[in-house]
Image 1 (tube, rainbow, N blue to C red):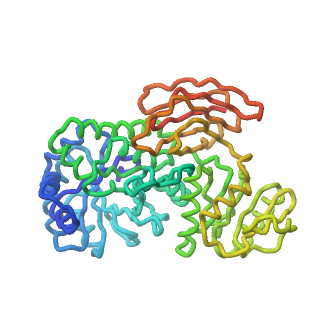
Image 2 (cartoon, rainbow, N blue to C red):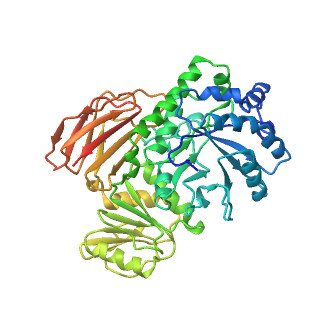
Length: 489
């Protein structure tokens, strides 16, 4: 099953897709025609010259149309395999998995993706799940995850997403990719469909969907809106240009595949077992930390392994119950050596209280560091993240951006050998203009800096200026929708 590093695309078409979509409001005769066309081998011409090499087709959903779907897709599957395209059958709903797997094997599919599959099969099966129930222990090369968001400035269609002086409210899947990568060895596939069925999605929004997952080391499963699929079927030039922009963005990250091995250089470690009881709070902490550009590392499964706190300035214990004894010992040592621990009320009595210095936390000193113990049960992840940020203070920031887009985010990661680092900047506005002048600052010193954009074949060398505060500044030659600053120590 050659799916690792493949470029997957959702490929709706056939009786099952028509049946599912016909139940939704706004399903038009034109949309039906497009679905019927996409089940035919002729529709594969749409992929000519693209990076796509894997189709994800609806295979079974527990509906009466399942059998008709599997029969109707046979010519498409045969034609796709003739073009060296992998074809994965998507199985959802109340379906007898073994029957769907047997039909997939007989039809010549490459694999089937079955929700939280735990059985045995002599045919390739890819378990998938939603965010809270993803099968991280999968042995498959890829892990598809659903229940994701369409990346962008949140609330654009619903009105203002922030006050006049507030940070824009960004929707992103990058934080979840970091969580998943901390828990699985499989490549993470982010399944996210465009919003609405009658909206016109701009080309830049599709490019953003690629970048949002790729900057964190994941892969977006390409999914197009009805209008774009129809325009591609009609061979309209603007639709072809949009498809090319998606393909070019994927191609850029594939040319820099070594970046996928980079891991976050954030100085805040978020700790949780992310079990069903703790997932909602802990995952929202990650989401909000990402929105506030708090660079973090995910420290998962603390009950199974002692967390690596090397390089961290703060550790956030986001679970209700106290951590296992071995983890407590490690965290106490971390604090004694100068770290900050922010935790719920279940923590012990270590340290000397500083008195009523914080509204919601009892802040104690222990050795060279501090423990901030919540006075009440952890209930508001927003307050938890903001309080942790203030307790740590911006003086511990390792990266800063000046004059960059207000509706943007960034990612700071390093290579496994510690010799290279990467600052990736991503604008989440699909309508805003690029910043013509921006400056990046890093606390660590680097001897060379190269500036990449998706539009450039080669990077541009960036001058380095040492600052009085001991950090390093980089004056960037304009910041488009996506840029990467590649640094060498």
